[in-house]
Image 1 (tube, rainbow, N blue to C red):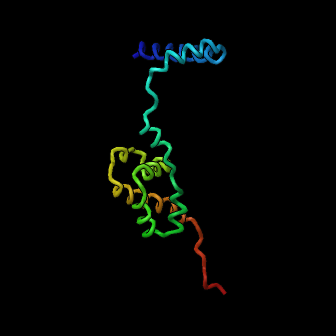
Image 2: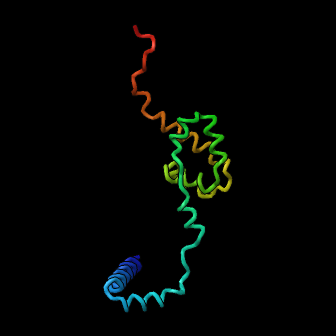
Image 3: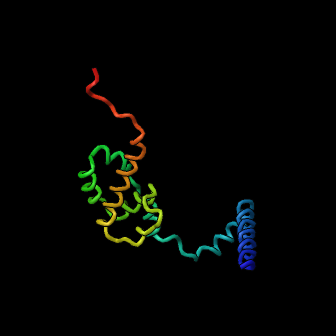
Length: 132
């Protein structure tokens, strides 16, 4: 294990050195670019997943109410639902990474949003509408 860590450290240092040289030497940077050109670019699927914007589910829940919120969630696509879960940290165990059906995400998101909005409400003083 120690050899692997040492090799990893050396490779990182080498990569940093190459990057520094490429920044200061345009001829070296052009040669490096020519060497690295055949390497594949990032996959379109991965960049698409990261680019999916996640709506503000807390504002939507408060505006729509719990039942209409669930219907609204069902109308969203799988990538958006995954982005909501990831952005808000609704699945720390990362079990949802394997889910392919949108119907599995709806109850998870609805329960998590409702729970987070209720968090701390036990410490609030009740309002008394019948005060004189």
